Image (cartoon, rainbow over all chains, first blue to last red; front, side):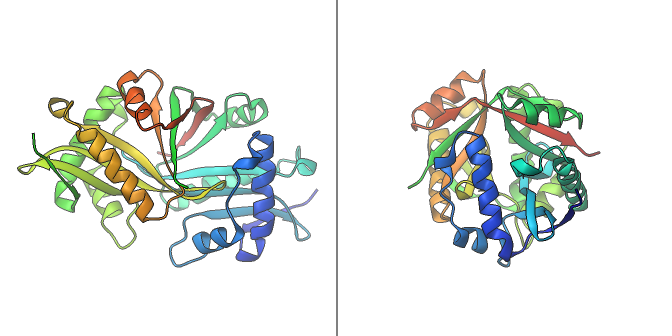
Amino acid sequence: MNFSIRPATKDDLPNVLALVKELALYEKAPEEVTITLQELEEDGFGSNPLYWIILAENKNEVMGMSFYYIRYSTWKGKCLYLEDIVVKEEFRGQNIGKVLFEETIKAAKEMNAKLMAWQVLDWNEPALNFYKKFNAEMDGEWINGKLRFN
Amino acid sequence: MNFSIRPATKDDLPNVLALVKELALYEKAPEEVTITLQELEEDGFGSNPLYWIILAENKNEVMGMSFYYIRYSTWKGKCLYLEDIVVKEEFRGQNIGKVLFEETIKAAKEMNAKLMAWQVLDWNEPALNFYKKFNAEMDGEWINGKLRFN
């Protein structure tokens, strides 16, 4: 199947949120998605965007996305952080994830990022195998800490 | 011992880099620190800062810092990410870390962050015990992935 790649616009946000929810369901935490369309709009499309999105689509149907932002490593400097990469279930197995990942690497290099980083659940074998193909370094020695404000 | 808290300025960056290196040594990865003073200066003190620092000092001697930036969670929205919190070895046990952590929580709330997040090495017992006192959620189920560009 053919597909094309482009940056997301505000109008894509309902589809983006649907992909976020699809991934959260797969990651067994659908109830954790409390973000709203309005927040996504304000935070991603103002004068100082907090994130960017690359979409894969076919005939105006969104098939998948890469959602990323800038992090700052005190060891390395500016980094691209890939928050979510997801392809809709019915479109898997067509290299869409690979193309989205490669486009994200390109975006990282364009912004002079020193590295590209992400996280993956330790039981997510398909994703772990996917990253292996890119010779990614994988490190399970870190624990995520979190305080919620609500 | 008395100490005071303030945001870092450009002039503090040599001390900041020394703290980054001290923490990297403790984390058994001193060779990973390749960032330069010039990069820290450009990235933190331009028109669009990529990070912020809270310092603890006594009589102009820097004793510790919290180094943070904004992340974006597709589940929650805007978050504060605490990249490094470090107190110089000779000043530990004086609540400086606690005050820096609390000041960082304050900064997170001021920027309307939905949560504050960080990572800690799974063998770093003193740090794990420190975070426990704040009732932080700790999650060891994620693996860090990384691609380096050089």
